[in-house]
Length: 233
Image (cartoon, rainbow, N blue to C red; front, side):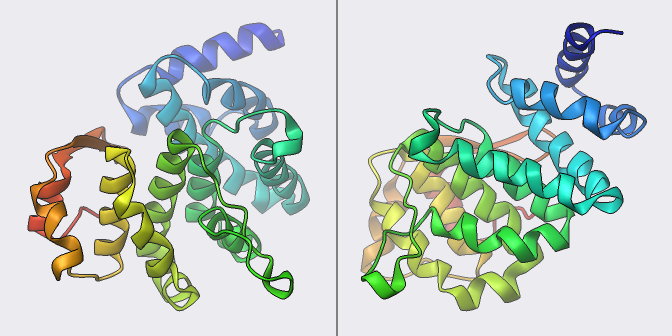
């Protein structure tokens, strides 16, 4: 089967509703054969295809890392490059896929978790230039989804890094999805979202949805603040 046929078959597979069946099928395929179609799928017009690609990236690159860690690192570097201004690209799906890979693969998380966090941060003084702040709200959505995905698994690493302070400015975003995902991240960290600075969020009727792997959860920002306990994937 040629590359184009493989790509088309993978795209068709990713469009199916049953993620468990998709993961079972892709687990039997060569990880190297999956990577190129998965990168293409991150830009697919179908939302379900895009998110299923994120899920399959997680298990596939974890499997790859178990066989050849350096090959898995190369995949991560491709994502980092796609988010680099010099790449000429935009990096659609990169933060989400990086997060899902790190969720499954602890060695890659140990090496790259700080990079994902850096996309929430501006550069500081010269001695502390560790920020790579992403300005585009559509990419911020993916970044905050990724942070939320990782908090339950790596809370003891992320919390001391001060990510609560990184998330809080997003509560003022003009993008409702960004606000909602920031709220979700803070709640996952244990923030009770109390005080005057959060009162306005209790009136925020913007409706957004979060991919869970089993589908999508939909709620308003206000609902999430009031519930105070987002679902942890």
